[in-house]
Figure 1: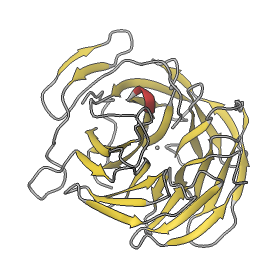
Figure 2: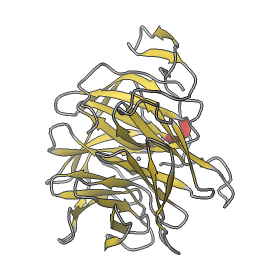
Figure 3: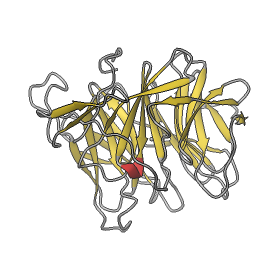
Figure 4: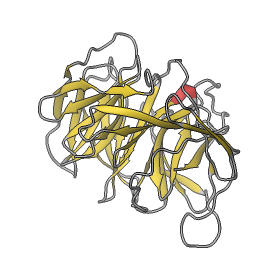
Length: 339
């Protein structure tokens, strides 16, 4: 694996797809074994190279937890969510199924079988056990993470001409992105409530015939949302009340092209750049209006990773393998890298 470590901001203990090619960034790699590193004087980032494998130290059970685990053949994964317990939930683009893996063993099984016409891409798990799922065709669903049962289905938009892509939890709502429309959708957290549509304004310019809004997370102060625009590769700070989007200034990187899933720990923002097989690591300023590149993470096991979730000192990602045949026989995996 190749990975770059950001500055050591606070990382509390255990507590997502554009389909376009793009430019590459500096790779910094750190991994589970020993690695050689160099410093880039121009950007201040580091670069190291190691091999993927198994790392210990996650959990208190003695043996090392696996850093790679299989998914069913033909599953077509894209989203991944992890809560306070060591279980990863992954969604299928093939039929909306949800697969759950025990991170301690790498073993898993189908939680929700899905169905014809269903899609599951971005996912987030709430503290009450509800799993929020972006369903692509204008749909957001809520599942019981214990049983897989569908608790609620929200038709956010018309079925065609939209791509409900990713989701984050902030305040009293689950916020969903639409890669084909300039709007976010706020679904009430829980089992009842009215959906809010938040049009994107300000610096936001919707581009035709490409994926725009993709990954989404809350700002460190919880007052706004950060959205990655996969094409042309930009980050935006979105006001929760008005929808005004302010482009975030990047330092040390020209863009985040192919930006897909986002994950944030404190003021450290991880941007998964799917077809680059890369995670760019940024430090946000206090108002999340500037993002400074502090390093990058890559790994030889990456095969178009799309989204990321965290457990303890690792990020877990699913390999969507967009550049490989998407058939019922295609194999898929999830992988973990240390942070």
